[in-house]
Structures are given as C-alpha cells and as structure tokens.
Amino acid sequence: MNISRVDLNLLVYFDVLLRELNVTRAADQLGISQPAMSNGLKRLRGLFDDPLLIRTSKGMTPTERALALKPVIRELLVGLEKAIEPKAQFNPFESEQVFRMMASDYAEATLIPLLIARLRNEAPKVILDIMTPSDVNFPDVEQGRVDMVINRFDSIPQSFHQKVLWKDSFSCLINRNHDVLKHFNLASYLGAHHVWVSKTGMGIGVGMDPDDVQRLGWVDEALAKIGAKRRITVFTRHYQAASSLAERQDLIATVPSKMARLQQDNPRVSIVPPPFDIPNIELTMAWSPLLQHNPAHQWMRELITQTAKMIDRF
Image (cartoon, rainbow, N blue to C red; front, side, top):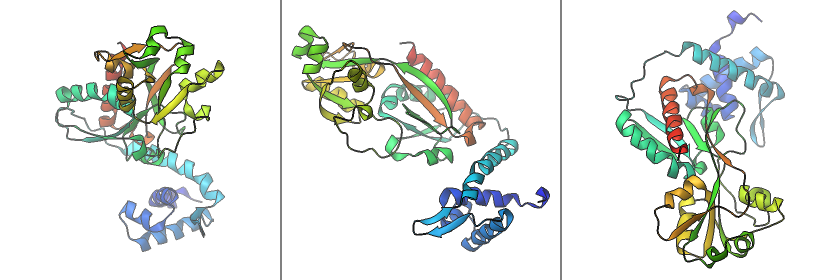
C-alpha cells in the first residue's frame, strides 16, 4: 500500500467508529451525514481488507483486526494533533474557559476551596464545572470531554497521564462525649459502632457487603491483617456526611487526616489517631494524552499542583 494514497480522514473515521460502535453516533460526533460515515466505513474495509465492524445481536462488534488497529491509530492521531496544534499563548487573567473536572468528595472538600480562592485572583473569569465520580467514566476522560479527574484510584488506563498530588494518613473523628474516648485503644475501637466512607475510581457504585474486606478498602484491610474487624452500621460515599454523623452520633468515622482537620475547630468533635496502623493513601490527578500539550490545560494542572503543595504542608 502506498501511504501517500491514504486519506487521513479515514483514520479519524476509524477512531470514532471504534469508540462509538455505531455509524449514526459516529457521524454525529464528526458532524457529517450518516451516508457519508457509511461510505467511510466501506472505504476503511477496503483499505484494511477486513470488515472491521460486524453487526451482531449485541450491536456493532469490532473484529480482531479492528481491535489490533485501534491503539495504533489512536497513538498516530494523538501525535498528529500534537504536531499541528497551534502554540497559542494562554492568558489566565482574561480567559473565560470552562474547565471540567471530576473531584471526589474528599478532593472537593480539601483541595477545591483553596483552588477557587487562587482562581479568583489569578483567573477571575475562568469557570469550574466540578463533577462527581458517578458522573464520569474513563472514556469521557480519554476523549477529552473531561479535563482531569482527581480521586484515589485502584487503577488508571495506561494511556493516561497522572500525578500524585499528596499522600495522606488517617484520623478518627469522634464525638467528644463518646465513652470510647475514656480508654481509646484497639479493643474499644472494635467495640464501637462505625460509619464507613469511601469512593475510589469512577462510575456508578454498588451496594456494600460488610463481609467483603477487599472492597471495604484501606481501613478494613488494615484491620484484617491483624485479625480484627470493626462493626460498621452506616455506609456512605460522602466524607461530609461521615463527619456530620461522627459529630452527632455514637459513631466513629475513620477518614483521611486532611479531611479530619476540617473539623479541628469543631468543639463537638475530637480528632485522634487510629489505634492501629493504616497505610497512607494517595490523591491523584489524571488526564487524557489528548490534552497533555494544551497550554490552558498545562496552566490549570500546574495551578492544581501548586495548590496541593500548599495544603500538603499542613
């Protein structure tokens, strides 16, 4: 095959078709007609001498050849976009850009307030659209629909860029009148009632099983390693809710220390270290390779990194 005779638009068609697995949706994504996309698929099949997409009971299904080509063509398009992207200057003070980011409840409570304060001074017209982990999936990030995601991740696609913003230990939030504080040790900790809180990664969550230690996360895995188990009576995905429950109820909330310190001026709450070792967690920022060289995105990533360093000193 003579590469000079290949229409590069066909590679863009292929990339969108393999992402959407639907001719009509792919056409909508590219702003072309459905017949034009169908003709593009026909030309792609001739170019690669393979059907690429086959209609099955589950919809359009990619062939083995298509799956093998997908990462190769994606990498090629990323390189082309990087090569032709204009190196326009980004003026944060005048910019009215909307940055869409997914932030966990933990990140939203600890990082975002100071970030917004800095934006007021450095980029007063910039707008943040903050989404929850349930609003976003990895394809949204990969395609650049979401600028960055800030959370604690068990795994991230290898193509993503990522940066650890900080590491955090754990602390216990306990009502100051709770009897457990009279002799706070492992035995009294295990004998109390607990509120569980966590939400890593992205996507819609499912109900929790009190006996599924691996899914319960860091606190309960640390307990399992010493042959112990706490009594969880409330499950929540929101740290603010856990903090409120610890303040008003006979519940212990074991949360990241930066989150706990938001309650340091609350006279109704005591903040104490857990009576056992829990490994530190990492707050990570991740983004698509499509946005790696975007000047506005680079500026926002640096601002987030600087803000995280300010918080991490305390």
